[in-house]
Each structure stands twice: as structure tokens, then as C-alpha cells.
Length: 536
Image 1 (cartoon, rainbow, N blue to C red):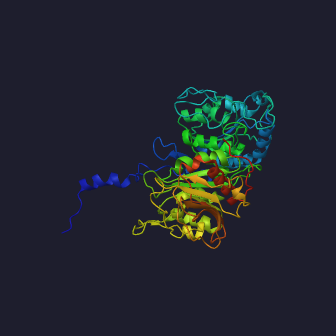
Image 2 (cartoon, rainbow, N blue to C red; image 1 turned 90 degrees about the horizontal axis):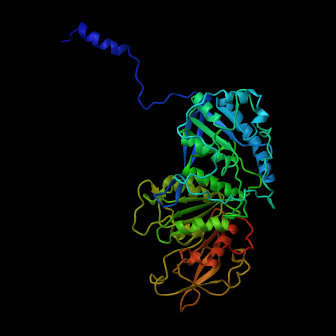
Image 3 (tube, rainbow, N blue to C red; image 1 turned 30 degrees about the vertical axis):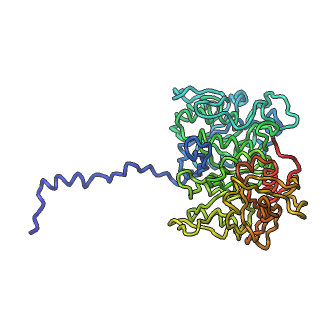
């Protein structure tokens, strides 16, 4: 029978009834839409400790603009290097739109044109920065472009001569007097070139910083208001990578284009200091690109355990393609071989080079490659690309993964069925030679016409597809020419294809193979095959 609650029970339950519902401990304050910054932060994570290879990963982050500062680093009105001045002028209109958008969201804009404070001494924006109370930093703030050996290796470019890419380079001098006029300075902005930026950030309770400006290898890393020093203070820092530049001269190491030099320093920052974003996170449209940067975007997709192309292809690409291509690399996971983290880079790729062996990818990842090919974009394959996305007979595809057994036939134009002899690599010899009548093809420019001895065993890819054109043939010692080794193809989507069944470590030691591969990539990418010899 139902019994009435006692008065004591009511007294126990009443306080619980009137208490507000508690939020879960991990809930974060809701950021109003008007103040939300949705950022796609790109960083580089080593595939495994000590590998020297990196996955390029992008993840979304939501920042409160009211707790965010935008630091504009050394966007001077003039630089002692004329080409640096020109690039600042070209970048500035897009940057000004970024500042408008960030300002409208509630971010603090801090203009930091170093060594020009006299020009701004009487402005309210300058006084705003000066009035920020001094705060003791976690690590003393410095103004130094020297790298931190405890945290990073030396920069991947040589800038010891100043980095000006003019020919001839002028002597350095202080050419700047203020920030470039294109960047508007509004009432609530601040102006400084020293630790005041940090004091102001702390005064406002700011925890997030977006850094942009020039130059990544110097001021953007080294100033007291820039990346190294702010990361030391445990602030959330990102670099807007398309709103920056580098002082790099292609005539010095690593002898790549100016824009590849910038990419290398951005990669250094992503590995050792902070993530990067682009201006598209605040504005519509594609990221900014300098008008002279016409490099096609080549993506290397590497995942095989036999021929060590994870070691040979990246330095090959830097040395022989860095002048004319923008190169990204996607490695298979060291722990989960069928997984290729970072494949979303294909969304921005112009051509791909496949060096993969018997991997069946997660369905979403393979769908990305299929989409790329279906768009009729160029494909280059070496060695095991002929059986890149298929398993051996009898092996099962894991759940959630997918194979592409027709990749060799439909894309590369081959018909791989194995090696001519499993003993070839140890006992027999393989010879390759330019096919008679094919000598004038651009891919064969500079390739010796005589027969060459190679260490790789001979694949069986015959018969080729009807749209394939053999360029190089191979044979086993004691036999006549038997198999195509390198050829071009037009795939089922109409894309231009180059494939070569060589690609072992020994092959990469041969100038003829390196030149053949370089030429094939240029041809596939629609660029004129260079006349120049391979760089040593």
C-alpha cells in the first residue's frame, strides 16, 4: 500500500530539486557564432619515433575570437630586397581582408612593423600597447632568429647570404619606415615591435595567437612577438601559412624554387613549433598564392616494405623536382600499413606518384584516390604500383577496407602477373634499353640508347593496354627483349599516365633511371621536360 513521504524525506530531496543541473566537467563554454573561428590546423607528426618521416595531418579547432590576437609581423612598406618588397605588396590586399574578418569577429589586431615605432609614436594604437602592464613571462622574451637546438634542427634552407632572390642581390640596409599602407590600422588595434605585444595579450586574457607576415625563416620565427617566443609562453599559436613569405635565394641550398623554400620552412614550423592554417579559414575562396608560383602540386603516395622508396623518393623529389613542383608526401602508417593518414591532400593535387605495394585502404581513402583518377588527372607509378591496391589470391580484404584490382589495367595500362624469375635479383642479370623508334619521345630526352644493366628483377606486364606506348624494354640475360619496362598510357578517365617497373634502391643510384623518372613526371604533369642534366 502506498505510503506518504515523511517530512524528513522532503527535507532531504528539496535542496536537490532546487539546485541547477551541473554541466559535465569536460563541457566548454559555448562560443557565440559571431565570435567563432573555425580553423583547419595542419601539423606534421612523425610516422614513428626517429623515422624522419612525417604524416601531414589536419584537424578542426574552434577558437573564440575574443580570446584571440592576430600578430602582423614586419609587413614593411619597403624592403632592401626588391622582390621581397614586391611580394609583400602582392600579399597585402588579401591580408587586409583577413584582418577585417578577424576584427569583425572580435579578435585583437596587433601590428608589429619592427624598427618603425618612431613613425607611430603619437598614435593611440601605439599608446595602447605601451600602456599594457608588464607581465613576467614564463621564459624570457628574446629577439633572435637563431634556431633552438633543444627543440629543432637547423632550418632546411640556407639563408646565410640574406636570402634575397634578386639577381644580383643588393646589399642589405634599413629600407623600411612604417607598415605597408595597404593594411588598415583601426582604432582598437595596437602597434608595437617588442614584448609589449605579450603584455597586451596577457592583459586581455588572450590565449590564442594567429601569426602572419614576413619572413618565416627570420622574423616570423624569431621576433619577441612571434612564434618561438609565444610558444615558449604556452599560448595556442598558429601560423597563417599563405600569408607569409621567406627570405630564400634559389641559387643556394637546397637549390629549389623560392616558393618551395617557403614550403620547406612552413613544414619545419609544423613539425617543431606550431600548426598552420590558411586565410580561407576566415575568408571565402582558395588560399592566397603568389602570381609567380605556377608549380603543379605533386603528391607522393608511398607504402611498400620491399624497395625502401620511403627513403629514396622524398630526397629525389626535393633535388630533382623542387624547382618546378610543389611536392607533398603521404606515407602509410608504420603501425597500420593499410592506413594512409593525410590523403585529404589529394583534394588540392594536380598529379600523383604511386609507390604502393599490396595495400587495401580504408574505403574513404581509396575513394579519394579513385575520385582523383576519375577527374582525368595525371598518374605516375613506379615498381610495385602495378599491384598497389590488390591482395594476393586467396587473401581477404579487411572489413571497412577496399581493393582496386583493376588499377594496373585501367589506370597504368599494364597486366602485371609477377616476376620473370624469383632468382633474378641474386643470380641472373636484367638489361633494359630504349625501344627502337621511341628515341624522340620527350621522356627519353638524355637517356642513353645503349643497353643498361639494372639490379631490379624483370616484371611480367604483357600484354599492355591498347592505349599504352612502350618506351623502354627489358630482358633477362641470354634472352631477347621480352617485356616493357617503361611506358605511357591514357587511362579510362582520359588522364595522362607514365609507369616504370624499376624503382629499387640500386635503380635510384643510376643517373639514367633518375632522369627517366624525372622526365616522366614532367611529361605527365604537362610541363616541358628539362634539357638540364640531373643536379648532383
